[in-house]
Length: 146
Image 1 (cartoon, rainbow, N blue to C red):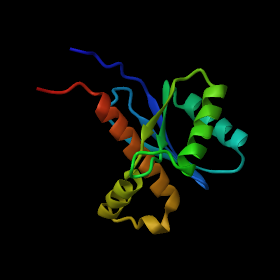
Image 2 (image 1 turned 180 degrees about the horizontal axis):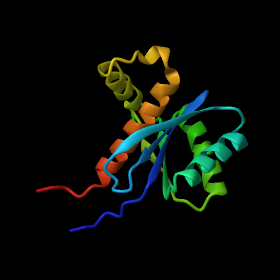
Image 3 (image 1 turned 135 degrees about the vertical axis):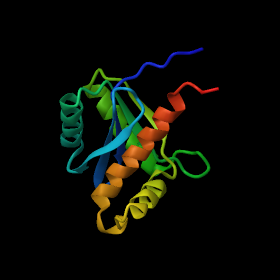
Image 4 (image 1 turned 60 degrees about the horizontal axis):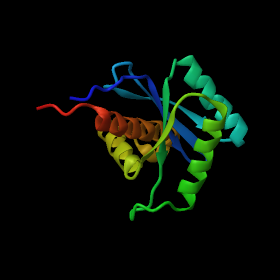
């Protein structure tokens, strides 16, 4: 039986205009939208992510990788990988990338179900998408229950 190590994780949904962020609880069970960063320049964006990571005692970062439906990396995945490499170059925290296909669609559904119109609050949608990415990551690392 394998044991999972629970860490506070910060998930990032890196877009062209914004970065949505979500935070896990220390038990690794819950993923909660945290904030949205308006993109400026990569060094400043990385600074802000690292500031939030330090503020929340983050021990791991999870970056959503927008793969194409075929599973291949397209141009946007390349831009996200460049951002992930910039993070790796500036922190000793582990940084992982995970497939984020359908995370925004799922976040939109959840927001609508809660009475929020996602098209009117893109920042909230980006943070919610980061929470979906983190939830998927946490679920994949939990021990299977028999």
